[in-house]
Length: 495
Ligand SMILES: *Cc1c(COP(=O)(O)O)cnc(C)c1O
Image 1 (tube, rainbow, N blue to C red):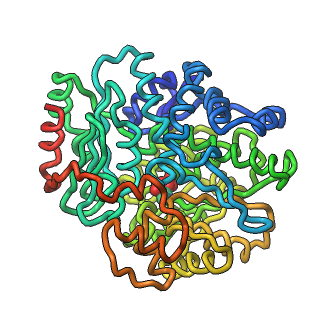
Image 2 (cartoon, rainbow, N blue to C red):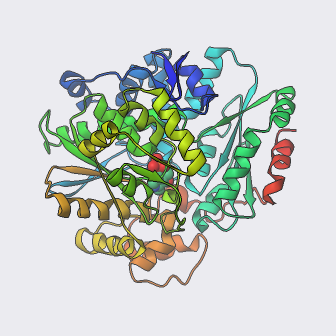
């Protein structure tokens, strides 16, 4: 199977090339030229096998230049017992008769980013072999907290790669910072940037577009690459867990083959919910895709009106991984819903770059209405939902997951739809101790990683072992830079 760009269909490259490139040179997103179809026999075969087997089976449909044997090995490395604290990898927790929670945070960094970032480095390493690339890939990441740690954990000591992470100095939680500055591995670097996430992100973008720097690095034997969710190698591993969740519902007798389920996903860059969409397009029986946002409700407005408008106030919330005004992966959805019309997509993206807004065609709007539902909740509602889940179900959920749970309630109230719905739980509550404690009505009197104990005392839920191990772990990185100095940091890192 070949891949092409959402902005240029004449391009034809292999999966390995797409993963190595990350983003197409025309600015478009690399996308499979056909969407493979699955059927009931395919799903039946997956019901009784492990998560790792399911991953290899689904991914091999898209990565035709990788062998199934390779993919099986990668899945075993990515999702094995040294990495994930449950053999189910992405288990479902039954909340009530029609509600299931898909826990995606059992990996090494306690956020759902692990599901893809334990896999991507292996796909990239193999891609370098397949394409004969001799230079070392240097992954640059700007992070609001979760991606940076998960990417370092995935890339640590992977041959022919180096990784440098920039995070906003006062913009990540205490636990997130402790996770990053204690990262092990000979090929990793971490730097705090004075400023907010946008400063870190625009600094990284500037480095990517700096031709002189690129030249200097090439002479030193490096090329720059990205682990952002625009990379197809991050979307594909996420398709797996929606199909896996369906198989688990079958196995548990919650549904019969062919029954439809809804998915409700807390959304930022539109990567996770796009993966659910691909699962639906492949033929998985899926009803409605419910897109949940926090106060940054640009996607809610878009799904309701067909107008995407980023000209609005940016809110910093307790679910920071969803604080985003431009959801990059939406471009892949527009491409698909337009009937793969690259010219139409170019038009939308040009309007977004120029005016910060665009309005989709009637055809796309109708397709969105048929398949999606968008909603958002504010900070108070998020906190109330955490408290309500604790009280009603004895289930501790994090701030991002709470947004999904709240929007799911809104959806049901608005539509009366009683279809079994799976909502995604994207982080362990222990990553956001401070806000979770406050939502439970406690005033945290500790700080840093001591908050882990404070939350444990209140909830009685075990602290994930890798987070517990942060206590007493040696701080390896202490670098802070102004945003203008970020290129210097990269040059030093790669000297
Ligand atoms: C990244 C992230 C999200 C948003 O996922 P997207 O794929 O960007 O939509 C939601 N919750 C958590 C905890 C995350 O880390």
